[in-house]
Image (cartoon, rainbow, N blue to C red; front, side):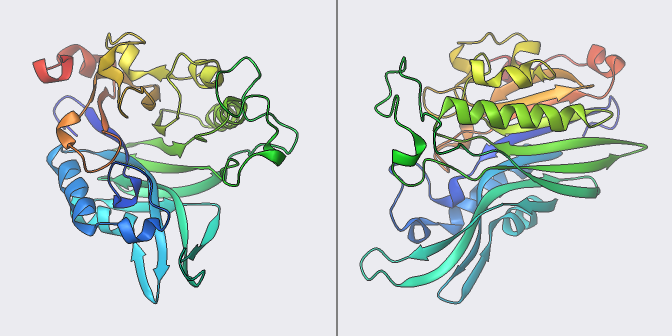
Length: 300
């Protein structure tokens, strides 16, 4: 935070549990690379981030060795951390079918400021009769009911809402991750998030991997109540500058009651994950916004 003008640096980063880019491994826990996680934590510290929303953060144990990725990232970045997940899975070795442990897969918040309260809210999952994708889609699962779809299509997602104290005021910071599969499932989750935001007074920041561009129909419940940081500072929908996961513009920083001054995809983070972080600068007041101007790097 720039104490002189009252701006916050906020990031959203899908860390993919430290596995890195490429095909998702069957025994994913073998691919977790702690040096990758350390790189990501160091990068966030170098960005001088005040608040960070993390997705695909793992917590669990393999053969008696516990791992807590949100704690590690908090330690490396020098920030408080909170973690949320609403579903646990057994870790099964594919060759022997032996259960070697269990894991949570969820979201985290890192904060430079005191976190006074944190709450986890489960987001809706699809019903058996819901279509994975509508018949009009070109997806291979178009018209297929979730009951007939391959395992894993119904994803347990949640929102982690933290009340953060910044000087003499408080704001709510939300880290979330919407379902990868199913526009209808994402719409239900976005609608629930919109309801949660409507029940919060004061400034709100919602950041995360929403698995859809901001202009998509399923994100309408969020567009109705929150400001898209990219749009607010002039990056149009469809602009390649929004691409945060290959050619997809799916990671976002949305706000209410704060003024986006800058927003960019930080591609200099490299290949630590299959996503690049989105980094936004938000002003706490109109006066702060008026005194700020994006740097050349932020405008790129």
